[in-house]
Image (cartoon, rainbow, N blue to C red; front, side, top):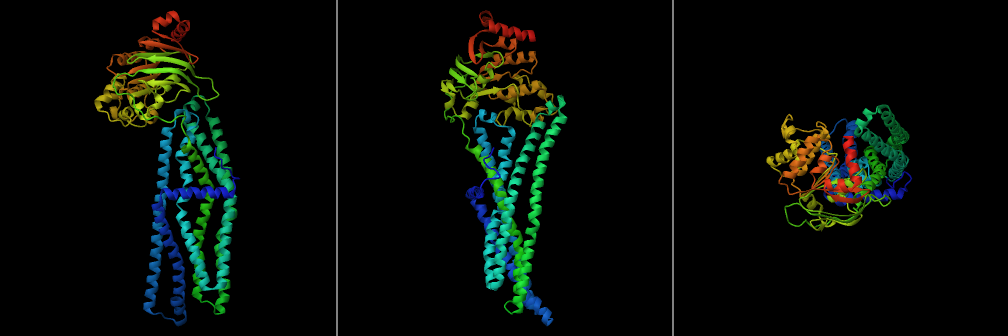
Length: 593
């Protein structure tokens, strides 16, 4: 959770919020400068429009009533000036809005890319400790919240210019009118500040409730199969309804605050105009100012209402911006357990050698080791079956072999080079892993196999044939161009596994790790796959997390693990004769079958 709370001191919120806005300006100075220029033009044109209206009142409208006529030249000048000011005002608005949104959306894109790159750099262990909803929020909602005040930021610069020009205009027109106006402007600002202070807590809690509602919805949608099969629809509905009601209550609290303050804020400019008209009437009667002066000042206060509200909007959004940035910053500041290396594996295109030296691994500091004191050498070109009871550490070892996690102690070396020293992209070019639960993208079969890699159609088809996937892919409506749907929902579990296997094989890895990757495949198809892997001219050392006897028998050697330790290794036949625990496990599997 963020360190922000509704009770955070006002100074810290403002300081942090100003820091976020300053950072945004440093990242994208060009669009900000253009937006400020447009805002300044808008401010000058706004004040100018009030000046022009006052002049038109004195020189055109009042003479028309008093004298009953007006010179055509004066009327033409008045029309030209009014149109000119309007054009300048419109140009300022278009320039400011275009550049401001260029800046805001550019910052969104910049930080989304940074967050996405950070996600790819952080290890799997970091991702496992955080819910999917939190990660999605950091890349989307939190980034948007961080830079929500950016678009109106240039307008506040224009507001400052406008207030300075307005104050100068008031003082130049009449001292007493200036006193009235300059007293009302701080009052408007004070009401905005009070409103923002009152709405900050409910608005922030409402933002958190939105995240809670989204999290429940995400879980329900993601677990739709469990919800349906166990008849939990009513319970999920109630859970979602409870979060929705909490969100409703917070939004009602926000609405109450707005209902209290907004009518008063709407009325303030009108009250200012009434006060100016009252004082102005007295000053006109005294001959101190003209009718046009009063029209000019009154119209100016009408125009000031929206800019002052925009300033209040930024103040209201600063807490949300601070919360969003703290969440994004927490992701960007996260560091992996170790720094990635820069080396590449030794040159070669043959099967890899893997050395496991005194490896211990625990998922966290308080957990018992999943692997302990592991020593082994996997010779190049061999097919090794990892066998053991549930919780023996087989999948953990498979994860370590391809660098998705790092040993707590000890080393795993790829062709003599410690995996920690290898650059991640270098390792992924030489090693591939296929897990039991295969993820497919909402793309074509070909795209799911290549994943953007530059492979020819023949290479793709050869990999699919080796994975026993070519036949069913060809039978799809558009063959290899058939879109498989989100997560490959149009395919069976075994078909998804075979496409995932083809995805690994097309890269011709020097180390291929299969973590129960054919568990959903028919045993006869699995045998064909494994025999094909053994007979194919692949440059691969193969490590298989195996359960089926047919799979184990095809391996050159079996490594038997129990409670995170390597108990014994040898051929299937040898282990059956000298290791009772292995014999019991194999027999148990056969009985279950």
